[in-house]
Amino acid sequence: VRRVAFRLLLGILVFFFIVTWVLSFYKTFLSLRGTETAKAASAALDSSVPAKTDRWKFQPDLPASHLQCSWRECVKKVRSGPDCAKFCRDSLADMGRPPDVKKKWVPDVRILRRTAARGLDESGRVWPPELPLDLCEPMGPSGGRSDENLRGLREAGVRAAPIDAGVGGTSVLCLMYTVSEAHATSVRAARETWANGCDGFLAFSTSDDPRIPAISLPHDGEESYSNMWQKVRSIWRFVGEHYAEDFDFFFIGGDDLFVLPGNLRIYLASLAPDEDHFVGRRFKGYGKDNYFNSGGAGYTLSRSLLKKFVSNLDNRSCNPERVTSMEDVMVSSTLCCVWHAG
Image 1: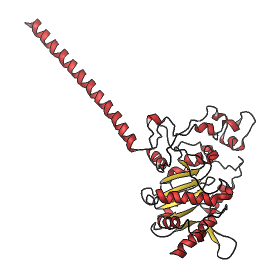
Image 2: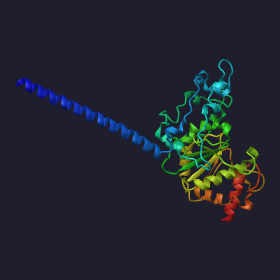
Image 3: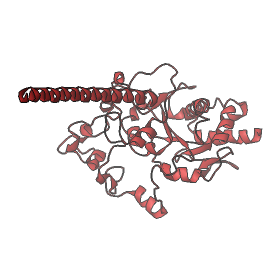
Image 4: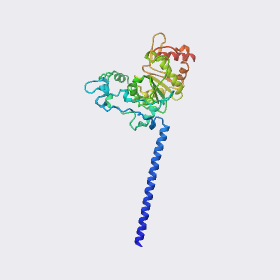
């Protein structure tokens, strides 16, 4: 009897062990399946996460040899020892081939902000990428230790607010005009630093790259500095058509500036986007009452003024066919037409 009871008890224990193991395996399977489903749903909802079939990297890899040169040597392009001109992070080859885009595509201008808020790119690497502390050292445009820009900022008492200061309140779309040759240099520098603090960011270039994001727009005349007014006209027309209702303010500048988006957003929060505001560094040009906001420092239009400006781009009295590099002067001239037209 004892032997039968022992065998019966052992059988029951084995049965429960098998059942428990099967249930545990089934729960693990469901959990993994649910995780994959959630990831797929998240990727579908958040277009900043590229699908697996896209096969492009949001953050390009550094060449394995880049550590042979310091940042200061990279700026100097020192050729003693390692060839820093080859090893520094300014090669178009580092960026790889950009993903294809559809004809007449409209860029997702919030991709950088979402990725920065998440803190990781699609490969799980920190975003924005961490930068070495030697970039905080005084450094001139040729790599020397005389840094006039840093001295000017200190003397002016400029202090940078956190890059995301004011996010969730007043919204700013940051726009940049550039060319494809700068994608791996100045555009990449902006993309990995200050551009992440803008509520939206878009570069207008000579080739498309959704990773930046950058778009190439047709415009009247040739692609040259002497024809900047026509390029800027096409930029503002595109922005007015696709983003006018999505942001409160619209900042534009070249690829050779550094923006403090937190400071900019805090200041713009004191203004009403549904009123006409034209914000920037005012210059006095030639002639009487010829004032304009400098394009070199960048300037900002409120949503209300953007709509009026775009609606008057083809106004014959606003120089729509003018060929000139002075786009900032022409923008101010057009805005005079806007206000005169009421």
